[in-house]
Length: 308
Ligand code: GLN
Image 1: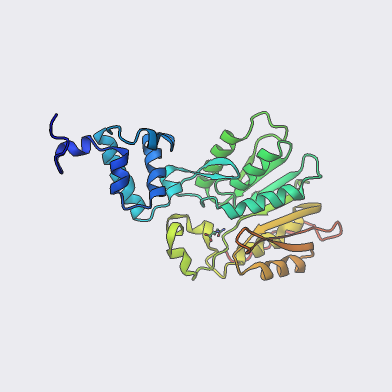
Image 2: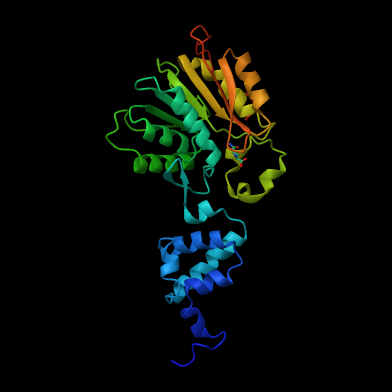
């Protein structure tokens, strides 16, 4: 009793409150609230209603560790282990790209592309968290869904997200996960053909300074850059798509803010019809795609590989 007004003292940490920690934090207020709510397991509203409740010293010590990691640049999504995408909460680890809001455009556009098709088959190349294909599968329970990634760690994250977010009884069945480069792990002797192929591939050029900034410093480099001009993964995906698409099947790819013209040219050269790009909310041409005409070349005569 009696010494609540004392300055710094060992008892101060023990009597710290959310209000005091938020006041003292060097983090932007919104970030501090997200991290504190995560650490305490509280709802964001509880940070207000319970702002003056004394916190355990162990929690306060953990807070200071978490705050220091964020101040050193670690992404919020990695610190809380999750990010919302298309209204679903995806597990995120340092082994996967953090889902971005602009990638929801790829989901919406693909859902439009398969709107008139029953039990459509959808393939996601370089799935990472699985956000794209799981969001599509969640909106279209009848869709049959495949996901490929080169990273075993990423596939484990995608598998957990699919298991948690998709109904085990969905008519399209479970997500099929395959490890390898682009189309390589698919069975070339099968008669499998997709109604839609989607991808958010690594499209940042290896010398782009953004790789050394912000969240990107902490994300897997292989999910961000092709270690070349930024278009080599897209070249491989476009070149081999006709061998895996059904007649009228659609390919949609996310790309960088300045790559739309080049990606449309690759699609047109490969024989795609109706090639177009769609702008994200910032007005940037963010995804490009097209439809495979029924007459397009489609034999599986070995995969065409570009650098990567
Ligand atoms: N959209 C990401 C970024 O620029 C890059 C993702 C990617 O390379 N596929 O931050």
